[in-house]
Image (cartoon, protein in one colour):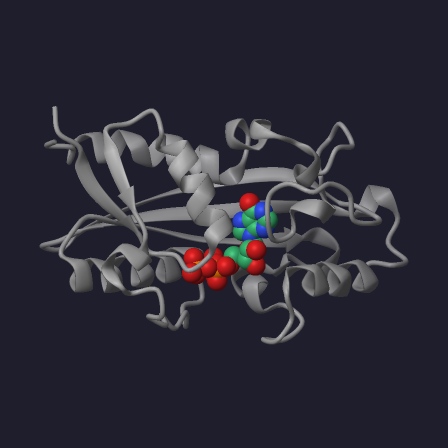
Length: 200
Ligand code: ITT
């Protein structure tokens, strides 16, 4: 059986790596934007929800490539900040910060917040765009806490400051993150939809 092709509409290499791992047990050949020379395509995320943004990214790249496109819009929601940063997680603290500086910014905002009030969750919406006009989306959530300081070397983004119930941060996990994460849960659901379109 030949492989069916799918492109992932993300400029975030951490996400792309995780999505490739999560699709390893399928028949999909996972391509990135650079396979189409589209790595510099700026997709403006103006939506007020993860769903709107994920659909915009997926539809935009599906139009440009003509193949099935998967997009991920995700974010961190911190209870003590009323659910912020949410859809603007990637730009939290300003557009020029890197991942470590964003984590730092969040830790500083929470300096006086005690452990029992540091609940947070990661949310991911995965959307697929089937050329011709069909769209599907599924969501996943991971509950945890914002740590007091950075710990761990793995993963990307806010992983070093996102603590699980057992006290480890996501960046301290190895491959285990891919069995529990918000992205894993959304992917488990969207894989069922993708199966219908795998004509490889
Ligand atoms: P694309 O839009 O190109 O996919 P992006 O990084 O801008 O890349 P989002 O707009 O969806 O993606 O923003 C997601 C933000 O949430 C970003 O700051 C990530 O670092 C963070 N994030 C999402 N999932 C994460 C995870 O599993 N671990 C750590 N941080 C995560």
